[in-house]
Image 1 (cartoon, helix red, strand yellow):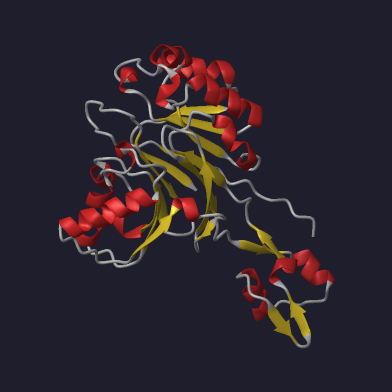
Image 2 (cartoon, rainbow, N blue to C red; image 1 turned 90 degrees about the vertical axis):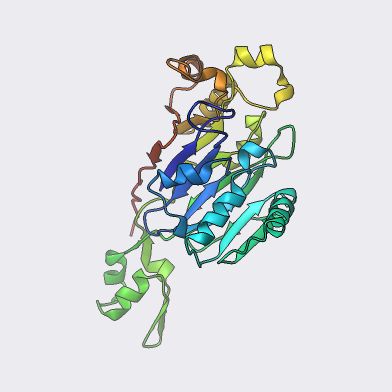
Length: 315
């Protein structure tokens, strides 16, 4: 499982413009998920290792332009490049309405089905064949959301000792059990869940939109490997600017991650005031003061790979 950062700014740095966007890819499928799509995202994507053709789910956290203005161009480019497989869009209703209006006005026809999901109507998780996505309500100047993304398609291993104890000899049924299929062997029904286990522990990440209250994430954090959260300002600067911005600061996010014992914290969505040489050092110092885990300040085109944790199963 890999987290790719296509754009890490909340403003307009010199080389990228409003490209708040990240992506989650997986080990056992080419399909991947994009979270937010700021202006110029499609140009950033062309410089990355990710492919238009395998982008299957797009999640938009809120209506602000630095998180959604890149959508029309990206989807149009995907169509012009010949994508055929469906794309799911999880987004606020206003974004969906705006997107359809833009396509109607510009007479844009997509080459694939765009399946839209109003984010406010998602009460439970959205289950796709390669991942599971839960929607987390956050607090910002407008309705904003985070996304808890859990991998699927984890290869299974056989509980050989249990199979031997139960007198089940090797045969084609072993392969079927390992693929997750239940098998009728003679008169005995063998359940795959009884005789297999995951090769590694399910990896889970939370990627947030803009959010001034990290504690809202508490119910979703007990089993995650990584939290990706905006740190638009340092605590001192946010006090100077004012809390009306609806953004977080490095201190609050880091304190929360430390309290929740989250293994890896990735900060992103930095104000343009921190761009340039040594610009992010104040953010880093503040975060390190309150968080002792694996701290990362994201940069454009940086990729973080979540390590596999093997499961020890008593057979």
